[in-house]
Length: 158
Image (cartoon, rainbow, N blue to C red; front, top):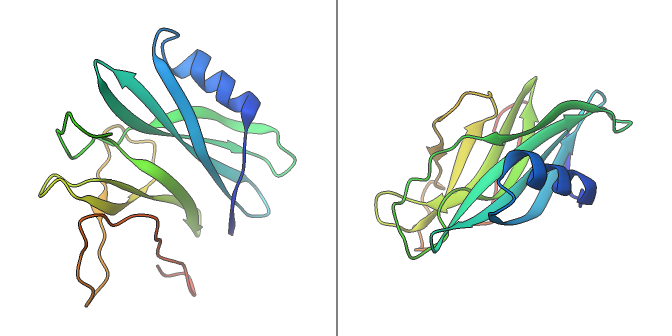
């Protein structure tokens, strides 16, 4: 499975109309995809401004390799860890990859421990309120902002 950055303009418009209120201030960007011989899994960031707070969501959908929609766009329900009202909360900059038949996302989000930005991993299982695992690199000190790095799959293992 490989990953690329890709723009899905018509899908973005569908997401705005069908998954969010037309009265909300919605931005959709940072779309990424992962594919194999059977499907293409897309993820993107949706940023919504509500009551002076920006909340980010991850939306995902699946097409066949010839771009026939197999699974309509849906919001991945990951609860923001931070309760900050000063920063953009929720998952950001998701990337998708597969191990076997399971699709996974890695993203950054504010941590509930010290309100620092950390990398998280979650399986795309479709379960509401799913748990995300905070990641770190062994023998590497954490910085206040950890983002835009990703583990990789080698011989079927992360």
